[in-house]
Amino acid sequence: MCVVGLGLIGGSLMRAAKAAGRDVFGYNRSIEGVEAARFDGFDVTASLDEALTRAAESDALVVLAVPVPALPLMLRHVRDTAPDCALTDVTSVKGAVLDEVRKVGLLGRFVGGHPMTGTAYSGWSAGNAGLFHNAPWVISVDDHVDAQVWAEVMHLALDCRAIVVPARSDEHDAAAATISHLPHLLAEALAATAGDVPLAFALAAGSFRDGTRVAATAPDLVRAMCEANREQLLPVLDKALTLLVNARRHLANDEPVVELVEAGHAARIRYDSFSRPQIVTVAIGEEGWRDELAALGRAGGVIRSALPVLGSRG
Image (cartoon, rainbow, N blue to C red):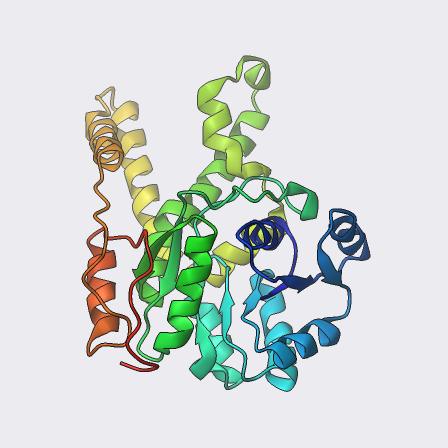
């Protein structure tokens, strides 16, 4: 397996894959990152052509673990050097990535992925092999996906001890806008608001810490994910703003904010008790397998152990 990009997610993936007994090598642009990874005993190069040539020669799965703005360049390199390799990614938007993959003609070997995990830190030193343990790992079941490639990505996620969630790219992006990208913007707004209030940081405790945790993420990464998913993010941002504006109106009129508080509380309680039934009845490659997995994932179903594979295409 070849990991392209060794930041928090890519570096953790390399560690987890090696811990699972996989043969894994990788590329990183930063010489400092390469040296740190080598010091830790990993097979890493600062030459992208070298890494992709090796991937092509060994028919390795290529995992793109770079920010969205870097994807077009990386994909062109894959097209020119390792076009027949199975290809996946770990970025937080799927539609934008799918468009870029389509542009370079690699759709037939591509299956999108997104491990729903992370920290506010970045770089090789931030990674750890346990990052994916019990984390949802979305694997796209778009109409084009090849059964064998999908199964290969599924096995990777399970080897990293993640829980596989099958989903279509557009549905993933709509959900990610709500539970990932919107929280980033709200965290930034909360942190910026508190930063202008004298004594606020001196009094800040659990609520502020939890509510602003992701605001510590590198700004370039936050911008990349939010801007790449703007089409799905705008409607949920509008909804959140409407809820807040209504709450403000109630407060200004000396009225209770019961509507927002109770709706939010009820939704959080539903999340705490949300069921994730295991998917066991689908064979990868059988007729209609993509639609069936998408429906099961939409209903909360997850894959905890590998599903059987019948063929290369359904």
